[in-house]
Length: 216
Image 1 (cartoon, helix red, strand yellow):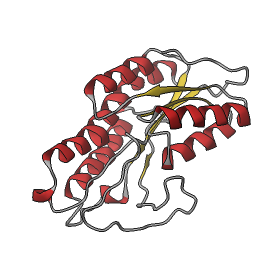
Image 2 (cartoon, rainbow, N blue to C red):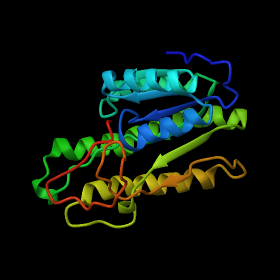
Image 3 (tube, rainbow, N blue to C red):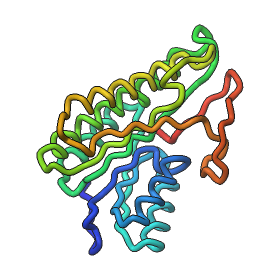
């Protein structure tokens, strides 16, 4: 997929994963207001199309959509191939994430694998897809969404904390590898939030057995 350019696209195109709700949707709104074109990625095509339509109408930017499940290796490759070859892309927001809380021995392995795939593996692959082009053009920003649980684990967040610890250390490592390249890889560490559209942002510690999904 190629990203269409709009007349006022000097900022380039921002790619946002998990864009159909929550933090990703807020990033889409804020970046559109700053004049970025957008490539919005998530599983739920209906929500993506509605958000893209709204942002095109309200902000006059180009907003394209790409439906993908970042827990699926084929979809990760599809997204990586798309963003690696488009020189108009100037920002990647790795926001998609998922969690399943509970004692480790009671969390099904399929849920453990999904957290590893979405939170760590997909984020890593997509970062490495855009980084060579960003460095070559000396332009581009990667924003990796971590968590306060990047820094510690609770008795019911072990796998999730492990994946977010990877996000934080991977991000720090890329910063060091990149030397003088300045606009690389800030890492955000939000707390848990209650409302999918962030009408009120809060730190609502979820009870064991629950989880969330940043529309991977």
